[in-house]
Amino acid sequence: MSFSIELELQRFPRHIRLKDGKRTIFRVLEGNDEKALHQLFLDIPERERMFIKHRVTDLAVIREWCQNIDVGRNLPLVALVGGKVVGLATLHQQLGGWKRHIGRVSVLVHPLYRGRGIATRLITEILDISRRAGLEKAEAEFIGEQEAAIKMFAFLGFSELLRLADYVKDMQAVTHDYVLMGMELKTDEEYAGVGG
Ligand SMILES: CC(C)(COP(=O)(O)OP(=O)(O)OC[C@H]1O[C@@H](n2cnc3c(N)ncnc32)[C@H](O)[C@@H]1OP(=O)(O)O)[C@@H](O)C(=O)NCCC(=O)NCCS
Image (cartoon, protein in one colour):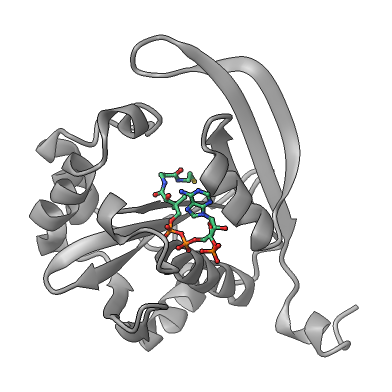
């Protein structure tokens, strides 16, 4: 699986023109992006950061991510404007077990760069890579309050699979609803009507 992902990644870096005409570059996260990626997390307001599963304000956590990139397991795609990381989308794969055909995707965009289509474009790229890598389904997890994200994923073809009231806890130990969304990934052959 990771071999075909690496082949797919040859099309990056890609220059993308946003809705407002501005240019951004999409590419895979690199070892020396740690400061720029850390800054993205620092610029996320505290009330949103509470919903992120990892301690992302800790530079050591980000350094660990940047230095141990295994794209077959965890593919981080970043959007850059100037030298600044303004968006991050991740494709997480289980390499074995009963979820090996399901890719988990997540996305985060810098507050000052929202509403320009960055998340939509990043997720579209991630879904395209997932499909070509042979994954059959994509899933994404949310806290009930992440309404903008839930709406965006619905627009991209995801539907709500499960909602559990007060199921998860944020960093302040306050409970929130858990929402799981998912979509079927059709392969190119299926689109062409060959693969069944
Ligand atoms: C959700 C998030 C990723 C959207 O990023 P973005 O780059 O602004 O998204 P886009 O510009 O591609 O917008 C896509 C659609 O989402 C919806 N949307 C985006 N921001 C919205 C907001 N603040 N309120 C309501 N809808 C919103 C709109 O329908 C928009 O489409 P439109 O502009 O054509 O109407 C961003 O707000 C974010 O990082 N939120 C915090 C992290 C998060 O919730 N991540 C998801 C967990 S996986």
